[in-house]
Amino acid sequence: MDLVIRDVRVVDGTGGASCRADVGITGGRIAEIRREGPALSGRRVLDAGGLALAPGFIDMHAHSDLALLRDPDHSAKAAQGVTLEVIGQDGLSYAPVDDRTLAEVRRAITGWNGHGDDIDFTWRSVGGYLDRLDQGIAVNAAYLIPQGTVRMLAVGWEDRAATPGELDRMRQLVADGLREGAVGMSSGLTYTPGMYAKDAELTELCRVVAEYGGYYCPHHRSYGAGALQAYEEMVALTREARCPLHLAHATMNFGVNKGRAPDLLALLDGALAEGADITLDTYPYTPGCTTLVAMLPSWAGEGGPEAVLARLRDDTVAERIRHAMEVVGADGCHGVPIEWDTIEISGVTDPALAPYVGSTVRALADLRGEAPWTTARRLLLDDRLGCTILQHVGHEENVRAIMRHRVHTGGSDGILQGTKPHPRAYGTFPHYLGHYVRELGVLSLEECVAHLTGRPAARLRLPDRGLVREGYRADLVLFDPSTVAAGSTFEDPRRLPAGLPHVLIDGRFVIEDGRRTDVLAGRAVRRTPR
Image (cartoon, rainbow, N blue to C red; front, side, top):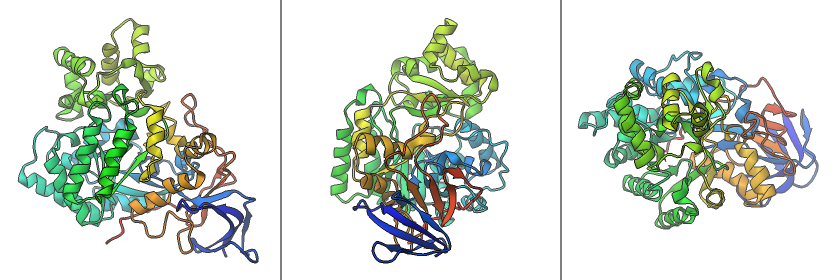
């Protein structure tokens, strides 16, 4: 054997009982799992001393689209035991594009991924982007075709139905991306321009996704007022298209949804009983994270970022925006009137605005003796829409109820930008294991590992990942169940976790003895043809 991990507690990703064994690795794959008999021997032996060995964790909702290219270390994910991230989320990413839309999407999601001035954007297609990832990255990555970016290419930023010709072009772009290796399609249905698509348009694109064996991953139209109806819409839409559905960050947020997780789970159970193919992901925290501009009503985003800035500069239009957000409840804020004391500034792109980070919009406004909308409007204009926020609107009882469900998987939704990012970016997976397994007992260790490994691998249709099984890739994490914990907090969000000393990808140590190595074993993980 190239490597033997001796006397390890194997938590194999199926949800079944763990066992003690020696695990031998050769050629980047698990060669033998020996539970009895003589100890395995190898060129290198790691005495695990009873540590748990699990498949590498799969982050089903990641925003590392540029971080994987700019940051070879990428300890934010590698140190958590993540060996595969699913990117291209929420309907906005960097392929497929042309020169016009590349500039537009870079501007639109600066708050998620930075300006990208340090990236050489040599690709335009999905295949070209995946080829770029294949040059060597910290962890593996799978890609979802972003429906908003596709609409940007075919229709633009207009709030209207696509013409038959435009719909044909979108179908072709989705088909091309799937042929080139994407695992499915994402949407951001509270983000422009993807939110301008009606259900009939989305259904037609989902038919293409289903034809190629992918899945649809929507950030649906509301997580606040009308959240349950938004979930119902996605279930019905994908049922009509005969397309597998994976619900992104499937939360029930805002005051209107306190204690309503059972309603969502009943909806899903009913659909599953009728044969629907549904999974979901969540992060184990209550606050959300997005950009401040995302809170605006959708009509304010028509035409793209420059049009948004022009509207914000116009006092009359800006007052209409304020009224929609504070009185009516903008669709960008999930139909709920915005509560400025829940909106915490987590990052800015202009260093001159750094003093705003860590304060709520309400607190900043009080400090300046002005209305909260005045402060928010100034931030949007001065930071040219790049400001990111935490939104403190979640409910712990909903978080716990949803994570127990049999189709649940883990996703960080981790935005790595900003001075004070959400701690989920650095802590999601150890927080599941330390807080919700060891401290609270919401899930057993074996159940939780299955949620983070085997179940997401099945959704991604990966034939040789997600389980500790002979013949499978040696994407593995060793951790101490008695000490594993997220280091990141809301006060110190970039602190790395504890209790995960070793992480391997293809049998190579990415994390060894708690330290990042220089190994870049990650590659693009392409859709498995049916």
